Image 1 (tube, rainbow, N blue to C red):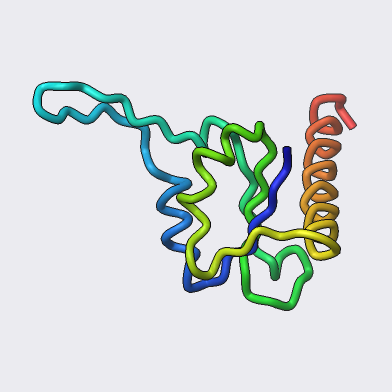
Image 2 (cartoon, rainbow, N blue to C red):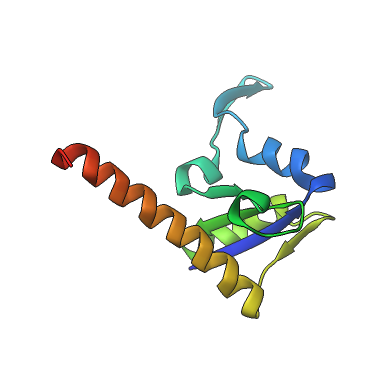
Length: 115
């Protein structure tokens, strides 16, 4: 399952904090609990809209993983200033991000193949 979120500048730091939350062990009342960063484990792509050729000053978060992940973790990032994309806007951003990723992969292939 693939989802893309449009993040306005006012929400960027809050979303980035969730994405960058370090994995750790917390101890409460003698109980140890492992805190896992589900976003880091699932993998995501975060891109600036301007560097992708869009005019708006926004960022896009691209996540491709299973539905269970979204049920559990999507509420952490769906805050004011974050919009889940759908329709033509979703397709346009998806195409740009995937095109960029393919370009990076083919560039790495050229490095390892000796050009």
